[in-house]
Length: 608
Image (cartoon, rainbow, N blue to C red; front, side, top):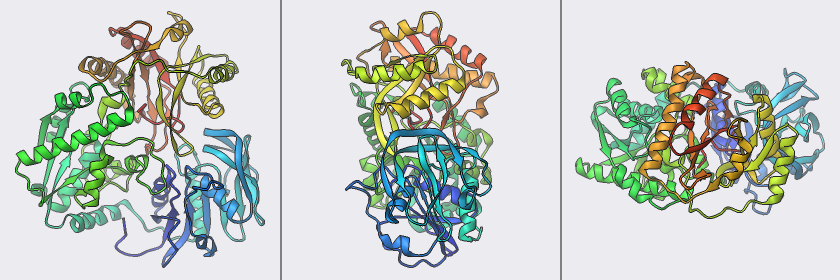
């Protein structure tokens, strides 16, 4: 997005980190306009640029395939803040040294602040921060000093006050670094930036952008019923007029219990009249029959969405030369799909399959929210007058329950005995038993995609102990990207876990109906206990694991987040948790219920 009126701004050099755009988002929240640029391009004209922030990334600074960059960026005399990979690049560029760390850090760490100066001004002696790295700075460049350290990272913060250049191994841009915004605010003050950016300005510039891109054409928008597509609908209709925007809601068979009917009622109540509903559930189920691979499932679902949309457009008589596709795509969808030049593909979102890239290249897609995160979308929705029922809805993935219903070809999954032993050793430090589940899930570690076996810890423990055990296991065992908890009790949890086997099963109505019922139990319990608004998102996951040939397992995944790029597992009240587990265990075929106690990173929000 390019601002129509030039003003002071900060540039974010994107080295492919999963949080690159989140940095720009946070800077804008501090009312300074920000833009993302590729580090390989020469600096060029810098009118109004008051500082540079270097993002994280999946590469190593000493790797031959590190993202290319123009060293001229470091010779401009501007204040510079490097984060994670950017921190390491600063060290290398100015003569320091970076090596692979002996201990990886993912998730929460504790920063011991040596000097509360520069970007750390105002911080206390110990701060909670969010880490996601495998390399570390082992020797400082000349002129730099250590400002902070963690138990596993001796140079967690460094700075050269004279040149106003700072590096942080942790991520201040994520919400799970509690004083991260204060750190970024300190940097912007060092940059002497004017604070003039607002969300009102975004809305005004989006109107201009829609008019400029759409021109004389009209928009056919895919409407899921969530806040993203609803806000996109309003922005497009506001800019173009209601008659030029037609909405389509597709029931793909992967919706929650009675979800499509609820979507129609909610949008009707919100005043959306130009909406069509198509039941294509049988078509989607046929398309994914016999498919177990999560990436392939996402690709097929994305392709089928577009085929259904195009056929619906034909039935409605919408000339493709005069109508383009609208989507409520957010930036996390783009960055996780590898939409940034140097970003690793974490998972392919249904709105980023090959056919969408083709349509984008032909300027036949409009995505008015593609610069925003979930929290910003909700702000825009409120400013545009959308009802709270739509604004506050829990996020629900485009492929729906298809990515919460894991499938298997039934092949025995080999588990490394050394990995199992190491997980058991770490768990014993917390008085917990442990094992490895014979399924795999998607994770994001060090800005790269992982596809690994989850560990399961077994026993009674506090949330604090479970969080510490989960962090220790995923930091200490690279082959594990997720930890679930099996509370002790009858039947004996350890014996049950050992008896679970992966069985051959795919997406079909019976499994999806079972998951719908389990999901409904989870969501109903939140409503009954008055805690719906305290949970950002609550995926309920079905695993093809059982002690019997027809057995299934369920995972509860309640989350706390604001921006989707990072998340903490949400500790439900004991009574709510017990009620949900007891009710789900009564469902026919469910043999085990687990609780996901992993943050993002190293796990993703969903399991696929």
